[in-house]
Image (cartoon, rainbow, N blue to C red; front, side):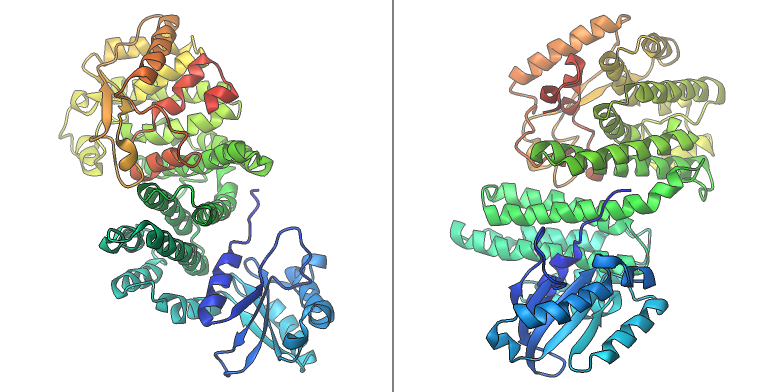
Length: 556
């Protein structure tokens, strides 16, 4: 399982500040804090009295096991606060103030642990206690964080609407996306000087982790782990777009905030992974509730795309920062991705050619984790199913349109011919090029024969990014305006000839003024996340260099 970090700390810090408290100590890694994650001093809004707020933070729900869990248990933390922190760590001035000990958790106190909490607090009558569980946090967020002056009224409304609709698992986060776009790209930014823009940007960006924390807290109440992850993915993309367009890349404070957002994305990803992982280990565990093959295909390839982009972000950030934990996480995700593909037969039958995006992300992750043979088997399965579905069934192959209505018209109502539905394919081009990388001499001739004899009408093509795409790729679908298509592609009979052609193209494109080949000026993996999120095809320059052989240099 992937490990989760305590992203709750960032939310509670912002909440304490918004309430009007002064932070004395904040969470620190590797430093013994005697049970106190956050020490703040200020007026208690409940009684108007100034006091110490001694906050201990625990992830998720608390049951009796977590209450008694050794040095990391709730009881141990509370004991340390009372026996050590209050006695030895408070300043002389703060010792004169009453102290309120707050147990903060992202979930709720289970009934079995509530008895322990009530018994513990009643025994220490000289101290005040409070419980900030998921419900209390939601209330405090509504009362304090959403009243920040930095949010104009329209933005507040959209954030509130987001929180209200999070219980709908089909919600597309449209209100949050509108809110963030308005927040970061409103007209008020245009008239600011460089100095005032940086100050405003630091304050504005510092609120974004708070917004993500709210989405996470509300989603956790309804056990929805997907919404926080997708919200964080969108936030990484739009925030970077804001940073680069305002030339703020070198501002240390801003980059620190951006790293916090990435940490939240990783944490939300860990929660999503840990929830889905058990279902990947059983046959058709991902598609068990799907009513038809089209729905099953959509569900499986969405999961493939999400897991792959999450794994690539862990791998490439880990390589860039030399963080072994991230690299280990990427390997764990890669293994689970293999389970999704192996245990769900529909993974060999994408219903849209557009799903090439998700397949390509998966192949890159699998390849950098040494799974070349697995990729070959998957590609073989996809091509065999494509051939059988097209030649024998006349349906069930990836169509060159991305409209569910068109697919239904074709497969259920017979309104289109199979030739029309297979008129274009990026999937076959991608598989062909990867055959050269993998030296797959078994599949390659079969692929070429299939295209030449059964799909002579099909325009096999590959998309490449052109200069200027960086202004749009982190914002929306960028393929049409900033793309160069290689079409039609006629794969040569010899895989060696294809490999030679690709090597020449790599050299040509690097020298060309048309292609955007350099992507090391953005946070690691971010363009790949943009492809998954906005559905721009995966940039081939992220993987074509592997035709030279796998190496750290090719990976860079």
